[in-house]
Image 1 (cartoon, rainbow, N blue to C red):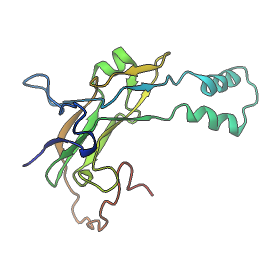
Image 2 (cartoon, rainbow, N blue to C red):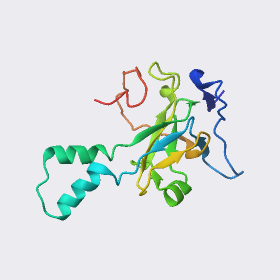
Image 3 (cartoon, helix red, strand yellow):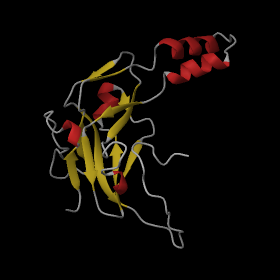
Length: 178
């Protein structure tokens, strides 16, 4: 087995489908949401209030900025899928072209990286989540089975003279943050 997808054990009996390419020349495998999920619009509440204060040149406190910033936090949409691959490969997560255009949904950093050692990690069994924000004016309701992003298997190269990392993955999403 070189590379592919599996359903995580906690969601095996939930009627999920493995990611698929939609055409013979497609590079990306479409991922779907594992459950209904509501992505709130960023243009609500504290974010809009703070923008208005800035526009009106009123005083904006640190608490105002913090509350507004919280509205911009991406949400992790579960897929129920994990990916296995060879050493020297990763799964690139990307927007579907219809996400921003039709639904106003984007990966805030443009792409996501799923490393080979994320598969079957202790923290979440390697379940892949799409980190999304909704920049539309209304909340967006994702339906279970709706395609939310795509994944592309990619090779990577190492730098000459690199000191090889010694750390082993110990957790799930964002586990290597310091």
